[in-house]
Image (cartoon, rainbow, N blue to C red; front, side):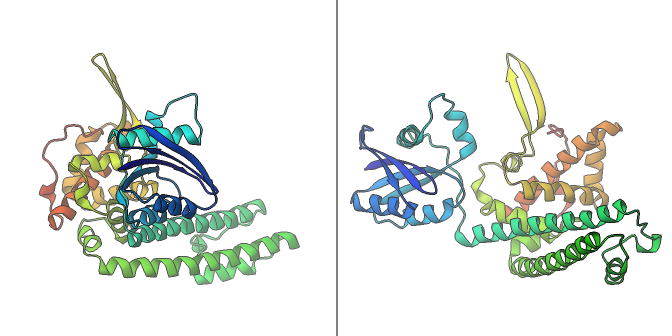
Length: 350
């Protein structure tokens, strides 16, 4: 059986092939789309296992390699863990392909989870909605900035500028120059378009959430809405892929960075690894959960210990605890109950 390390890019792919005894028998760079590399591997006519680094568009390449007749194992390597392994002053495509092949031969390649095509599309729609919300926020900030620059005071009764009546008022304001008026009109057009796009995306996500039992289950948690629930379910995908429930916090980047040596253990800021959109939603949901659930509020207060400067630490601890509870619910199928939370707070500052 052949072992193949693949370093793929948009216009070139480099592959290193090892034989059954781990000896390098071929290294080759193929120019063009990665489909040419897939065809080359198919023509080898032998059973193989292959590894490549996760990057933009890794899903279709993974699916194409899995579909090949001789495919025994297809590994998508975790890029963050590879960077720790590949610390070297000498780096090029051939060297990377050789290292990947050797790691796979030794069964040491850091494997990343590859969801199905439907889940990948779901994730992409969630990220698209997040970008659409950010775009809408930028447009609104641009309109408020335009009013401030021209000294236009917003009446108290129109503090919420984004209702239909207040948008009509905003459009009727006389600005000092024609260029400012043009910019105001263009921003209002952009806002209307952004709202239309956001409504379509949200409607589609709501339809998916309504069909997904896991999303409905997580919404039994006080303060967790459909956006947080769907992001968690989409990125977890298979709740049983984590060896321990405690590992889900690290997946979402909610555990502290650590520097431990010679009996000295230093904990820093959270790692912020993993999906940023889901992490942001979990932290936002944590604010709502501590307001609506007495047990979570008690947990928050214990971590805070009456010190205002520990509120952020406590909030991250609640978000971390929340995602562990959510994973436990997905595994067991149970609805939310306060006793899901452990009575002790050991490691709560994580």
